[in-house]
Image (cartoon, rainbow, N blue to C red; front, side, top):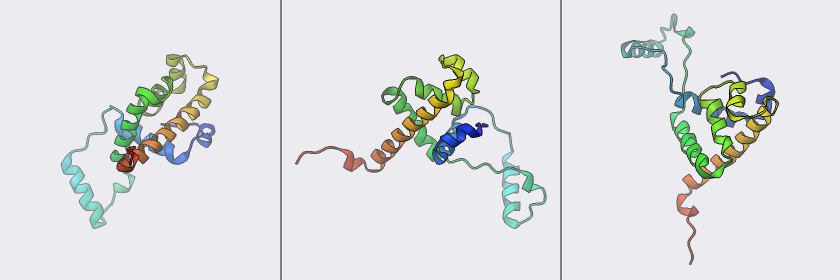
Amino acid sequence: MKTPKLLLDRLPADFHDRLCNWGEVMRDRHRRAVSPTYQVCRDLARRAGQTRNLENDAVQEWDEADAGLIERAWSLAASYRMHPQAPLLLRAYYVMGHPPYLICRMQGIRAREFDDILVRCVAYFQQFVAQFENRLHNSAQSVMTTV
């Protein structure tokens, strides 16, 4: 997905990369078909240093665990934590890959306000993901107990 530079300057770079990764992993589209035999032979050739024409092949690595975490946080945020428009906008932009004019038409947003709304949604969602990760990693400490 090609994001305009003016919008990229306003988004947190590391979280934008995580959202792009989430979009690539969760996007429901067919990927280029590669036979398992070719994959094994290509990996063996790379390890052996015989990469005659393999430099042109783009190696795309996705962090599926992080995408799963973002998806779980998104589903929780969509249910009760964020403005109802925000999760739909994030999913349409990052996962579905819809262009901004189409998202504006579907959600009734003015086109000139799209960048501001997207930046605000990403900031809210980044805050929620940070809280979600904190609660996930410190689950024993997040339970309130009385002594």
